[in-house]
Amino acid sequence: MLNTAIIIVCGLKSPRQKLECEVRMETLIDSVSHKKIANQRGFSIVELLITGLVIAIVAVVAVPQIQKNLQLYRAESSVRIINDSVMEAKLLAIKWNRLCWLELDPNDNSVVIRTNDAGGSPISLTAKRFLSPETTIDSGSILSVSFTSLGRNQSASSTTIPLKFPMIEQCKEVKVSPLGKVSVLQCSYS
Image (spheres, rainbow, N blue to C red):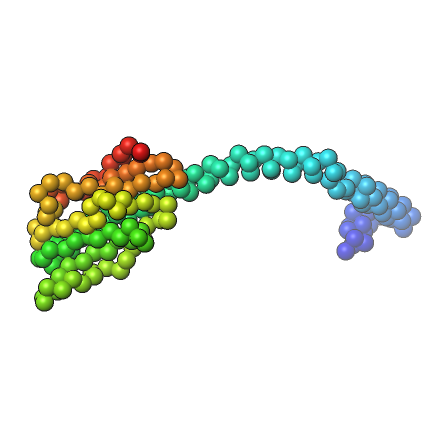
């Protein structure tokens, strides 16, 4: 293929001119290919060390921030699970036209929605949903929220579910008003 390119560049000239052109082209190609080889070299040890040092510094700065963001995400995920489960319990109470409640289990950090069957025995309407391991449900707080067939909180006063996140020193509350309005509030961590 290289010879074809040389013949095309040199064109239809006299044999002597053609031979001189071919020699010049081969010489030019050889000099270019030798320059490429001479200019091709690896990285020096200093360049590699500096690159490694920069990567290490970036990792030292970035990893703690990534871990904190991950813990914040897990905390928000737990709050979202509780909030969504409370809303689902309310909607299921309206849908089935019967009392439904949300149970919180501080032992395994789980949430489940229950109701009574026709015989009055409690049954689960949903599978257990697990909160992140960093979430702490205070066992001394209210561990269930009940909704009437109208979607109202069975308790005459507001029900508050406090969630603590010791790793990031934050606290959130899921609050259910007597009329069944659900809100998420920031609380003081102590």
